[in-house]
Image (cartoon, rainbow over all chains, first blue to last red):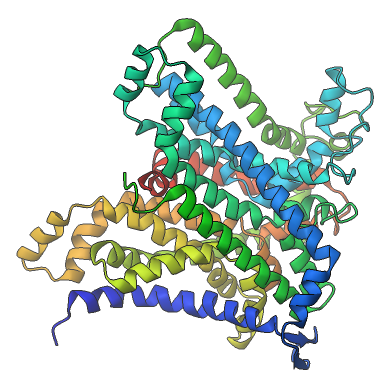
Length: 296
Length: 279
């Protein structure tokens, strides 16, 4: 039998497809199915079908509502700050041209650091009494004493503090992606705008950013998804405390699954979380990216 | 040459100054980690903290590496990452090739599915995988964890490799086919050598994804197959707050991969930006 192109393509795709079906789709289906059962935390324990009860419990619980809100705040803070910094640094690199190449390399290094290491490192930098950050601020005359700011122990600011290593870790990614995008902005467009006497802010917001739209969309979507899933980086710094002020959804679901031993409820929470992510990502893709609309 | 590059001297001086300041701030956390790893255990938690060690010592490295389970965890991390990279390339490269060369409907559905996989919270796959691995008889094994890590790196590999295959001219394969090679031969002997740089980049990303991963390792391993991120995390409970040892092990774990990737930086930048910039 002659192998058609179509069959040949299918044969090449099949192993990867089967792998993802077996180790992503199937576990995920079981996870979603579990959301409709009351499950004993013991392996092989009894299961009882309870319909949407777990979902009602989840939506009604202040812990879930709080964690959902914190996940949104965390994601927005991380993505907004790293986009601002990342864009600023990318513009500096672009303005300095090819001689900044070595520095671009150095700037990239946090991308290789494990999130666990980054989280622990920042916990070390931020610790109240012997953390170097407060000590440097004190020496700079900004603080009277090193325990004036409890970065990770004050529930009011802890959520912003735990975001810092995430921003540190991945601003480089935004910079690299935007820098590459800037390379593709046609030089004569900018030259023409300059000759017309357009000021830099106008140039940035009216010409450069709109041209970068697809690149920005990819960077924001990729980072938004990852920030919303952040787990180890927060766990290692605060374990979700103080007073649950840094418990995001991924931590709450993990805790409900393992420590509180309610896999059914944890699955319901996870299912809501997953649907939320898919909806937001779909909106983002169609709103900013417009695939097919502007193929570069 | 790029239109954004500025030629005015005062502006350039200010920008260089800004850049250096940013890099110092950005580099400081990790430099401080390295400096701390060479301090004595007491120096590491001194109040007030000092930036430079008062006395340089390798004690933290010796102590950290001689702790039970640390060296096996490093070996496990390496083995898991290598195995997962191999799975990821073996499955992802042919799939990416088929998707870019033969734009079949199944290929298009598959791309969307692989993208959705990226949005799935790790715990939603990880928790049921515990049961799957037990049934397959590979719970708490390196191969089990490598399979789990491949669920992260495979979509990424397909995405990256598609961009690299995209850049290979179809004429190259046509020529090979005229010379009498079949599709598989053309793929293996003509296309793969052309994308070898892309293969290296994809391999590094798959390796890093596994090397730095935490939650799957936490859920799927206990003792035998435990990887280093879990051991580093345990430094705070198991051994008290051993900041000296923690920084030393973190340095051992991070410095080689940082150096390796910086050495290959040109390729890495290409890999990181290719997919995104193509849009």
